[in-house]
Amino acid sequence: MTQIHISIRKPKTGGLDPVTGLMRFRPVRRHFDAEKNLVIAASFDADLSESGELTVDLLPTTSAFVWQVIELADTPQAYTRYVEVPDSKTKVEYADLVEVDAGTFVPKDMQGSQLLKVRHASTQSEAETLSAQYPDELVFFDETATTAKAAAALSTLESITAEAQTNAMLAKSAMLSARSSADSATATQSDLSSLASNASMAAASVANDSQTVADTASMVAAKGETAIAAIDSTVRAVKDKAESASAELPSAGTPEGTTEETGKDSTGETPTGTVSEEPAAKAVKAKAKKVTVKEA
Image (cartoon, rainbow, N blue to C red; front, side, top):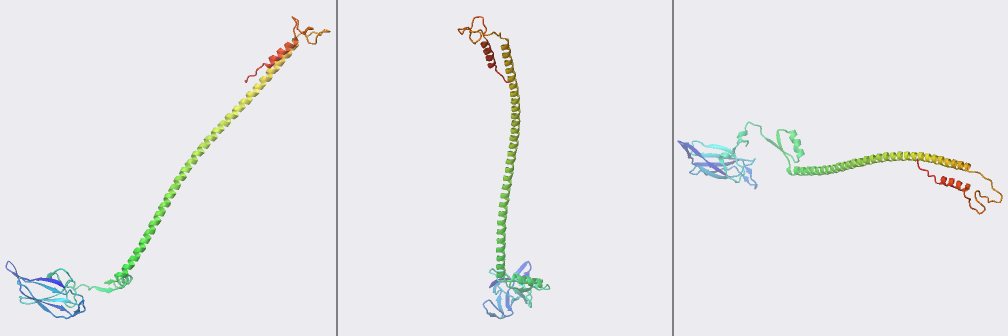
């Protein structure tokens, strides 16, 4: 039940006065309520208070019926309204009730406009088909089936999203690995370049050292040849001097009965004033042995 508050006034000089009388309520058309009761189109009356107010409990209206309200106040003539009563837990003002047409139950505010037509569908796909077929009609469909399909679609989207995130992480890991490999390759190339530079420097140094050794060897060989030539020249000079000295010594014959060694008497001693050939030769040979060859 919904409580409806009614307040009726009439004008007077300087303000408004309350209106007394009664209000008559009757459901238009017979109908069945929520408890399967058949409700006939019978009326009942309710009196206004001395303050011109009334609170009455009415059944909420449905598509099967509306309420007829007859205002039987102390006026020259009665006035009839056909209204919808909402299902409300709070009190509703009589002035806020929607007034409808008695024959069509269409709100008076909508009279002259196109009526809203409604169709029902069991699934969302069927509703889409009907909506395309009847663009001027409102199509309802089963929310449960649609929710299940939406949940399945959402689950699929979540799975796709998770897979995309996984692929993105793998791609990022591969990119980082490639970047690390590139850095390592750059470092290795730098090391190889450094090694190549060091090898070039070492090769140049070895070449220089080899050239130096070759030059030194050539110089030593040249000096050796010069030294050998000097030694040969010195030896020849010494030999020539020895031969010349031998040629200048006096020659004497050997008397009979004397010793074979020249310059010695029978006792083996060399007389005073006698020049011995052997010591002179030895002296020449000694001089030859003492010749020292220095490197040129």
